[in-house]
Each structure stands twice: as C-alpha cells, then as structure tokens.
Length: 483
Image 1 (cartoon, one colour):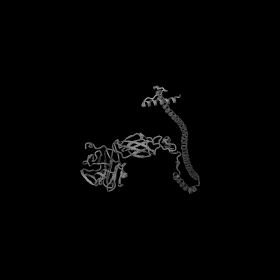
Image 2: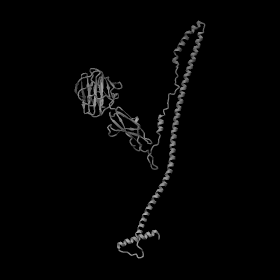
Image 3: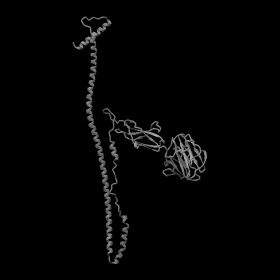
C-alpha cells in the first residue's frame, strides 16, 4: 500500500473513531486501532508538504527573477552602448561648433593682418612719393647753387627759397613719423567663459519613466552657497551660489528672513546665480537660503548663510527723485537750492527700525531763508516745504528761532537760529518711535514727534541762497540714553 493511500485510510479511521465518540461505540473487528505515533507522523507530514510547496513557489519566483535580471544586464549593456553613442555625438557637435568658431576667429585675425599690411603699404607709398619729391627738390636746389651766372640765379632763387620753405613747413602736415597702425595685435581670446562651461559640462539626472513615456528631468538638487563671494554693505546684502551638479535648472528662488530670526520670505526668482538685495534694516543679521527649480518641481534648500548689515547708516541725497531746482555736488552729499520756492530732497535709504543720527552743515545761508530738516515718506510732495503735507515731519529754522511742522501745523517754537557753519542734527529713534533735533550739538526743544510707524527717509527742503552738506554714519548724541 502506498503512503498516500495509507494516509487516506488512517484519516478515515480517525474520522470514524471521532464520530463514534459522539454517537456511541463503533466496532471494527477486522481493523486495528490507530496509535498516537501514527497521528503525529500524519500531522507533521502534512505540514512539511505545505512548507515544501511554499518553498517550491519561492524558488520558482526566484528563478524567474534571476532570468529577468539577466535580461536587464543585457538591456544595461545595450542602453550603455546607445548612451555612449549619444554622448559621443553631442561631443562631436560641440567640437564642430568650436571648430567653426575657430575658423571665424582665425578669419578675423587674417582680415586684421591684411588691413594692417595694406595700411602700412599705403603709408610706405606716400612716404616714398614724398621722399622722391623732396630728393628732386634738393638736387635741383644744389644744382642751382652751383650756377655761376648771378643773373640766372637771381631769377629762380626766390622761387627756390619759397619752395624749400614751404616743403619744410608742410613736412609734418603731409608726413607722419609714426606708423598708422601698430604691429602688435592688442587683442586676447576670452576663453574663460567657454572653459568654465566645459568644466561644468555634466549629465542631468532624469526622472524614472516607464517604457514609451517621455523622460523628464528630476527635480534639481540643492545649490551651493559661495561664502567668499557673499557680502554685506551698508543696508544691502549680496548672495552668490553655484548651480547644483547633474541637475537641470530653470531658475532659482532666494529667500531671506526678517533679520531677527523670523520667517523666510522670497526676495528673488530668476536664472542668475548672484543677487543683491537693497533696502534692508541696519544692524541686523540676515539668514539667506536658495533653492533651484525646473518643470518637474522645486529642489531642497541650500545651507543658510548669515550676513550682517552695517551697524550705522551711511547714505547720501538721492538726486534721481529730486526736483530739477536742486543741485547736488560732493558725491551727492551737498545740496544747493536754485529756485525761490522750497524743494524737497530725500536720502538714499529708508529706516523702519533702529536708532539713526545724521547732521547737516550750513555752507551758505541768506537772511530770508528758512531751510527745513526732518524725515518723510517716499511719496512726500517734493514741490513745497517739508512738513506742509502729512507725509513729512520737519523742523524749519531761520536766524533766530525754529518751529516743528507736520501737515502744515506749526508747533513748539524754540529760540535759537542758524548761521553759516551751524550744524543741525536729526535723531530718529524708531525703537521709541520718536524724532528729536539738535542745533550745534544742543537739543532744539523737546521731542518733536512721537508715534512714528512705517518707513521714513531723511529729508530736507531748501530754496535759493541755501547750501548744506550731509554727514552720516554718526553716533547718537551723548544725552541720547538719558532722554
């Protein structure tokens, strides 16, 4: 009896005995009882058969996977050969383009050579002709000097003297002792950009694609900040970075925080790899980061770089926004009024936080003038005295007294005026949101204006007969902390 039929009969026997235990005793006089050892053998044989079947399925799958891997190795070899051919074709195209450019450059050199040779030959021809004329004149004059007949010499002597004198006078006009062209080629081949492009020539990582689908570039990797090319000057920062290698890039996004470790915000989006951001806060540490993007998506951010703006503000007048009646000199640090009406000039930077102090020196001052000093919004009316509208906060002053003015409202008359050589100081304290004025290093009245919020530009209004010079990057007065 086979093992399979034996197992079947044993199972039937077990089933009947189990049924007998439920329905009562069942007698099988011709068959022996099944032992526990046989039951254990049956159970383990069944479990082993199931395990073997599972292993057989896994072995079959592994065999199929191995065959597929072998097929992929063949595919890799095939694709590698095709890719090598494509790279070689592209490189040959680059070489062909370089050869074509080489031919154009050499043709230009040859044309330049022919032009110079032609110019030198023409100059040689002219010089030779002039030399022949001069030699003939010299020989004729020498023969005339040998003439023994005084009457004959007198007849032609005056003419020869005139011709010789004229030839001498016109010699430098008609003849140049310097060559028209230089034998040196003052040219050099600018190959740095091409060499840099060749060094950056690399492969672009593509997104995985199914067979038959168009392959797209993968999202770019993170750019690399170039610390030695990054800088901070006054209230502007410059950030430079390198493109990510092996990535296709369509543009970059540069982000800065608020200078106090706050949230980042986008300040530039474009294809350049260097960017200067102006109009930042003074005495602030800005963190910058950049990431690249393409049609597939945006890549990760670069590492951050911290850039510290200047502690004190250096600025000048801004002639680009000033009326034509104002004249600027001394690198835009001195302003002169040429008209009878007041005209406003703004500083080149605006402030929204921090403490800033600057001064003006009176270079010229007529008795009937009353210049106005202070701050203003960027859209202040520049065709009238500073403080006449609600976009300017000023102190206007004459020889004897001063007033504060905002929105055409005069307030806080103070004794003490200005003359040639006087200094006017402006203290803008945006930590306390207030502005104060000084004349010759002394406070001019109380705090002029309070509750100042927003962006403020240094401002001044002058008219005919007034010239002032601006001084910036100054420390606040000594009594500032006590006020």
